[in-house]
Image (tube, rainbow, N blue to C red; front, side, top):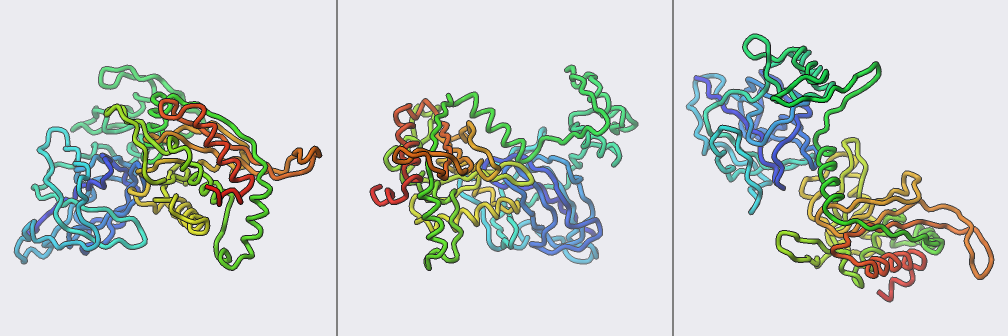
Length: 435
């Protein structure tokens, strides 16, 4: 007889508890093999593709695109024995997937409400291709009822357009089916779960986009940072003409012939050098332990705008890199981020961040510190400006820097010292030999 297995949304690590279904790569009736990509999801960190831990025939998709699913919730049903003649496979006999394994100390999955705790992941791994892959967690329990709200496709689309979470509604239709009226009642200011919902008008041409994934995580992190760490921002205007002249010379240097050295690369190198004299900017306030943690390396975060929102991938041990190596790492990091292929692990564990607002033609700003860090630098646009040199006003390449810092960790004197060090290194790159 057929042997049905349900594939639950796996724990992708880093404490994530939910993900949005972006796109299915299979449909009911399709034959799948172990390691075959079956679905693309978006977590609060990045978009990732999930492989099938089983071989068989897809019988049911349990979550529609656009649905946010909790970790541990079944999303796919596969018949392991569609012919009905083979012996039912043992859960322990599921083939190992090569390339990934369980991570020590990884976060546990959040159990479904009212359900028993989910068993630990099997010791199987798989091979990652050009897309990000994550460990799977087979569901050995017998199939459970789908955790998908009952609603027809047009109602689901309406809810998605209006930003209404169907899981928060109780359907008034026959059998508990959610109707268009149920969805409209939320927008019109009806009472949901005993609480009044403020009415929000929707006019012609208006558009609603549910807050999910990267945008949701970014918003939560920025609010937490803004209302937890006492922010102070200092500004510095710098003549970076020597830096731009050096950049032009490096373009013809044999060692840099295939390296794209940008102003961001110079700024990154300057930050790493200046942090040696002011280690407080490369630190973190641990409120629970009542300690300040001074990091032994600079894991440099670079704020990158992507179609899915702002992400901050990290260059590990940036302080151990030369200018050319750092330039290459930054180029690869930002390209991967914009393509949506940054691995979740590469978005955590930063110690200092640079926000390059200059690429958008912006002169300066007051950046918000990333949680877990004590400072962030905004690099403004480089413009031709009048500047006084030896008593004469001449045109120069000028840039503005803005440093926001956590005043619990960094005092004004330390922040000023660090910012002027960064400015001095950009104004005269030859100073780097003295650091």
